[in-house]
Every structure is written in structure tokens, then in C-alpha cells.
Image (cartoon, rainbow, N blue to C red; front, side, top):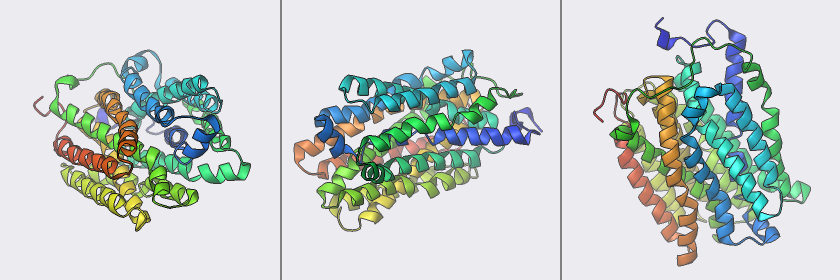
Amino acid sequence: MPDQFKGPFDGRPLAFAGAVLAILLAAINLRGGLVVVGPLVEDIRGALNFSASQFSLLTTLPLICFGVVSASVPLLTRHITPPLVVVGALLLISLGAFLRIAEPFAIILAGTLLLGSAIALLNVLIPGLVKGYFPRHTGIMTGIYSVTLGVGAGLGVYLAVPLRDAFADWHAPMLLWGILPLLCLPPWLYLLRVRSRTYQPPRQAEVNLWRNRTAWCLTGFMGLQSLYFYALATWLPKLLLDAGLSDAEAGLGAALLSVTGIPANLLIPLLATRIPDQRPLVWAIAMLAVAGLGGLMLLPATGTWLWTSLIGLSAGASLSLALTLFALRGESATQATALSAMAQSVGYLIAASGPMLVGALRDFSGNWILAVGLLILCQLIQLRLGLVAGRAGTLAARSP
């Protein structure tokens, strides 16, 4: 078997199973602690007397952290083993989540910075680990990883209101996302003791990504799909409340945004790794998104579950496709990690504008038409970029 298809845990089933479990337990922590604030927007603003701009900062700051911190991951992993980076990131996620329960705004911001920075490390590192740890199973592992991301996000939104009501305190659902990372540490502590035979930390990319057209299009695709998801994760509950739904119904609608994406999370990587050209998938994602957003714009209280389900399918599919394209367009774990770092560093800086722009357009117009219209426009741009990023071939095989 060629070396590039040998995994570091071949012939060691216990280590292989431990690596799979470790990847999934890390993934479950990457969205819930961020999206949990969406259904609690009125509780948090009322209890802490936050303005709309202050609340928007709590949802936007992690995306800025994603953009700033992501670029440092390849350098960091030259000096620290990837499992140790993950252990440190999980500890920081826990600390950041606990700090966000405090009431002084400055401490909440500090916790948000820690949370966003730690998640950024894992966002970039895990796609490279998937390619390095599981070179013969990239599609299925990317799919399972994406499903776990969706489950974590869905749990963050869906459990927010029930936990708040059960404990009569909006801090309760926030506390969950400080405890969970600590429970997910053992498999990574085990991997620290397992010698990896073939995976090496990233050193340098084989091509100049910053001069590569495909890399830039994939970066834009990643940024716009993130803008789409985080803008809706932040404001969909409020949009549904304004349409006349109860807070429980609005929470369910927001949960569908993540839960309905789970089938796409699993299916898209399997399809993408079996076809040389991923542009048909790009078209399908765009059509689902525009149909869902159009329904939400025109008839938010009629067919609500259909619109949110279509949006969730498109969001899950576009994230999974972006993660899969990091592996497909890169020729090695090194290049996949470097491409992931570039796409997420620039992409999340693009995404950071989403919640603020959507909120500003809602305040300016007094309704959600302009805000949802902006998201439709972004989907059309994402389609154009995806048609370039989805063409067959690795980065090195294409002209810059």
C-alpha cells in the first residue's frame, strides 16, 4: 500500500477507535457554546441590560477570533503535538464558557475571546487530523465529524429553553457547555501516549495558497457559508418571535437549523469523495438555501418548519462540502491544514460581519425583508465561488 494511504493507527484497532472517539468528542464542543445564546437573547438582554449592539458583539467576537487565530495553527503545530493542542483548546473552551456566565460585561467578553480562540484552533486542526489519521476514510470521517458538529449545535439551541425553564435560570444551559469539554478530555489524554507512525505536524504548503485562485474561491465559499449559518443562528429565533411564534416554537425552529443539516453532514462528504467534480453539489446547496430563505422572507409563520429545514439542509451541506474540499484539493495533510487555516482565517473574518449586518438591517428597516434579502445575495455569490472551488483537481494540479 502506498505510504500516502497508510494511517498512523493501521493494525492498532484500540488506537484507531480511540482516535475516532477523540475527534468526535472534540467536535461536539465546537458550536453549542456559541449558538446557545440565540434562544436566550431576550433573557440575557433583560437580565444584564445589554443593548442590541452589545449582544451582537457576543455573537460576532468569536468569529473574529476564528479569523485571527486560525492562521496561527500551522505554526503552532510545528512546536506542539496536535493532541496536546486539542487538550489545551478543550480546557480553554471550558474556561471561556464558565466566564460567560458572569455578569460583568468585561468578564463575559474575556470568556468569549477564550471560547472563540480555542474553537478556532480546533476548527483548523481537525480537518488536517482527519486526513492525516484516516487517509483511507476521509469521506466517512469528515461526514461523521460534520454530523457531530451539527448535533452539538442542535443540542446547544434545542436544550437552551428547556434547561432555562427546568432551573428557572438562563445560566443553566450556558453552564452545560463549560462542563462538557472536561468530560471529553480522556480520549485525547490517551492519544498523548499513543505514538503516531505516519502523521507529521504541518511544516509548509506545497503551493503558494495566497496566489492560488482555487484556494481563494474556497476561502470565500467557507466565509459565506459561515456568515449564513451564524447570522441565522443569532437572529432566527428573533425573526420567528417577530412572526408571532412562541419562544418554545422559535427555539424549535432554530434547532431545526442544525438538526436537519445532520443527514447532509453525513451524505455530502460521501458523495463528494466519490465524484471528481463537486459542482452539482454546489448547485443543489444553492437551490435549497434560496428556497428556504425565500419562504422565510415571504411567509415566515406559514410553512416555518419547511423553510427552516431547507435552510438547515443547505447549511449542513455547505459546511460539510467546504471541510471535504480542504482534503480533496490538498495533496497531503500538510496542505489540507494550511488550506484550512487560510480558508478559516479569512473566511471567518468575512462571516463576522453577518450577525451585525443582519441586525443592523433589521433595525434600519423595522422588518426582516432586507436582512433576509442580503443572505440570498450572499448565497448567489457563494454559488459562483463554489463553482470554481468544486472543479476537479488538486491545488497543485491547477493554474494559480
